[in-house]
Image (cartoon, rainbow, N blue to C red; front, side):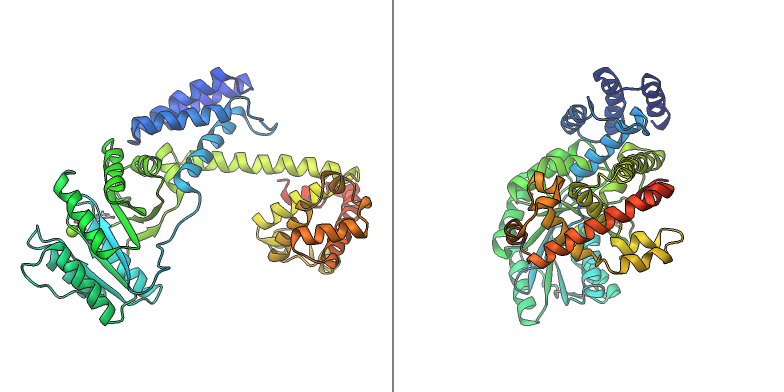
Length: 440
Ligand code: GDP
Ligand code: MG
């Protein structure tokens, strides 16, 4: 695909603009990539529609080719759809917090149960009890017991002849009596979705009232991913998804399908058979994999860098002209929070020691940046463009609106003045403070 999409991108470059036809052509390739990655057909359709509407007429910044722009939009949309932020397992409930694992047979429930238990024990210092509710396969309970032994995690003693709900009750009671923080219920699966499985899962859920119900699914799941995720979500109600076998050569399209039909977050990713092969979900990585190309990453990074550079250049121009207003300052502050605060930015600049002294007077840690952004957001448009109108009563209003004090507002205004002056002075020299910092 890399080559095919590359070809399309070249064509776009030559035409130099994002018309509906250009985007449509690129979208046909994106569509093919998604289908090859096993994303369900419906999901592919809605995804390409979304991207198309965003891409057509998109503002293509000068230093980025239209092709790069399309790729960036596709990539960003994919990341957003996958759920931009990693969501950990939620343990915010009275102990013992019950977690229920559901999924088809062989999807990796038992393995993942042990992986999660191990992680909670080692990383979060939790006392975890695991219980196998799989009474269908003779060796299932023994499998979990051995995994527990290997990883130093307690398992519920096996009692022959119990039903899954009986085991669940006993597990909860044992967890309470034993002072456990978390109890993980590993359930039985079936090779295919069927009614008895759903009934059994619903019963266990009723008994255990799990705080998390995690659907475990193989990353290689193809078009079935939608049916699977929908069935478990409708009948049992899942709170998250664990994608296993991401160490295989599956492209992980199931992640997008399941996320799209359930809206539930993908919380964890299994990357091997061993008990430590469990990772947090990184939407960017899966997006790259679904698009099926390593080059995409560098393309996207380059595009993003170019977009930033273009913004920085515009900013530098404004500074030179002395037209640096509070809107621009807010933009800069937001950039800074992205880059790890002022000290993070300064450390990336050559020859900064001299200037650091001047800047020391300016209080610039991360929390402060956020407060300053809040102050600017509480101003009217006119005030942001022309801070000179800010007299005492307006300052009071702004302080109240942003949950700060008038002194804070004054400090921000002073900082803005200092920065604007300094930038104007530097701008006359070599490209401006931020232009120099982010330009290349
Ligand atoms: P269950 O039937 O859902 O409980 O599935 P199991 O946990 O018993 O796993 C079935 C098989 O898949 C076992 O051989 C596991 O070692 C393997 N497995 C589970 N998770 C992963 C994973 O993330 N990567 C790989 N490569 N194998 C896995
Ligand atoms: Mg199992």
